[in-house]
Length: 119
Image (cartoon, rainbow, N blue to C red):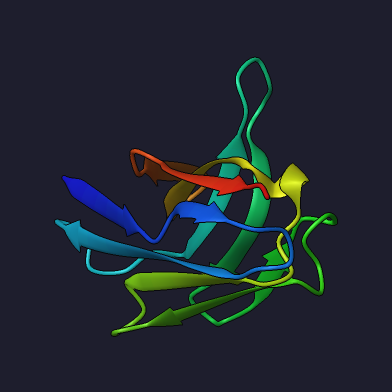
C-alpha cells in the first residue's frame, strides 16, 4: 500500500508563510502526479496545486502567485510553499498522489494537516 505523511500545518498571521511537506512511501515507486487539495466542512475539496512527474505545475485560481509547488527526493516528496497567506486560506490541506493505469487513476490521500490564518 501507499502512505502519505504530511507535515507543516499550523497557525500563522495574515501575510505570513507556511511550508507543507508530503512524503510518499510504500509499494508504488513513482506517481504520475502529486499535489495538495483543501476541504472545508460541507464543501467539495478544492485543488490547491499539483505537479506532474515531468514537473508541470497547476494551481487553483485563488492561490496563483502566492503558492509554489515543487517535488524533491527522487520526486516522491512534494513541497507546498505558501506565501502571503490570507484568512480564506484557512482549511484542512490534504496531500494527494495519483498513479495512472491505462485509462484509470488510483488516488491516494494523506490524513490532512490544518492551516489556520488568523490574527
